[in-house]
Length: 336
Image (cartoon, rainbow, N blue to C red; front, side):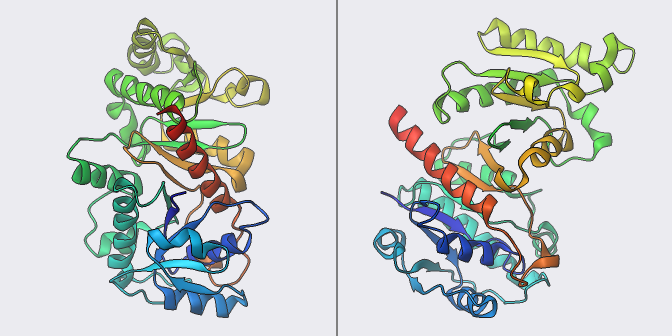
């Protein structure tokens, strides 16, 4: 069994401690073997600080599975990391980026089964010259760089009872209407439909498409995007045999009875997608990147600098991300 590759995320956040806690719960939660792309000295220091009994060993992917039962395998980075819990450091940017890049490379080259990323903070990376809006866009760049084929990464938030996909992601709300096009809605829906079939094992996915405006525009009375952009995209999808329907008023899409009628909800902007799924199951929701030639999952929370190093961060979302990465990997292998 190929192990999962975990990137350490921003070491000043809660990433290192939730990784340590996840390893301690490996038996309780029946976790598949994983290894960390990180700094062994920093992880050991954070474990001592938190009073966690986590023995570490340096190990490359090939040795991770055999080591995992008794030690947390760590593949050391070339760039060392500064241990400053709660205080993000620009100097750590090189190591954060290296960890992500190596996790992706290991997975694309079949040394790892999937990528699981701990949270990053964008500002320290921007200050160091990082030119991508976030994790998702950087992963798309790495995919193209390593395979030579363009990739369109799509963010999905997947919880036990709800999956949501934002059509526009890291954009100011004022920019969403001009960004939203029929072609974009169709592209995101087609990728979502394909991935639900190929990786989630859903034979006939049902896609609920949210409207952009209140009441899905009220026939153009509250904005024309729903009528002129989203509705034609849904019609085109239906013509191609995709079970998409809407546009639906977003305020009635997420109660239990409505959720039973679809497998994923496509939302028009970031918070429209993330608020409901995080409200329903914050500690169990996972960020999944669709549209890549490898599987990537991540916790749905951020770096939480305000509680880093205090021993109160919960590993539940990371554990859910680890479990989903293994499930998607197994599904993909079975379908192949």
